[in-house]
Image (cartoon, rainbow, N blue to C red; front, side):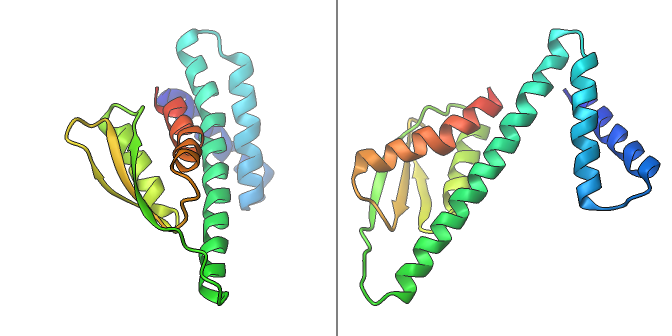
Amino acid sequence: MRVQFLLNVLLTIVWVFLTGVFSAYNFWAGFILSYLVLWLISDNEKSKKYFVIVPRILGFVFYFIFQLIKANIQVASDVILPKIRLEPGIIRYPLDAKTDLEITMLANVITLTPGSFSLDISDDRKALYIHAMHIDTKEKFIHGIKNGYEKRILKILR
């Protein structure tokens, strides 16, 4: 997978130099073009994994940015508006993530999102304790993380 990524970056750099346009737009256009070329010429199963993971990573990044913007707007409206709509609480979140990397990524993404904070992990590593400013219902909160962040992280790392 590293070989495909490095080849993708190398072809992107070649594209940028051949076109002579040094801009972020041209870099991404070259990256996408070289990604498609590499995908078309790949022939073994080992190299196919790269072509599955890259779209998942990009999907996760866009999902995270969307959630980040949404949470920032919600927290900003709580600060600006005189009516307090906070429903804070601590949730025991059951984990599907098993490895240290999966749990760490999930905990960090939750903490990076305004209005939520990862507090601790249980001793048996089957639950994550999360503090959140807005909890409508426990089930809805857990469902949001389970089908949002955790599902996407596990698709990338497994």
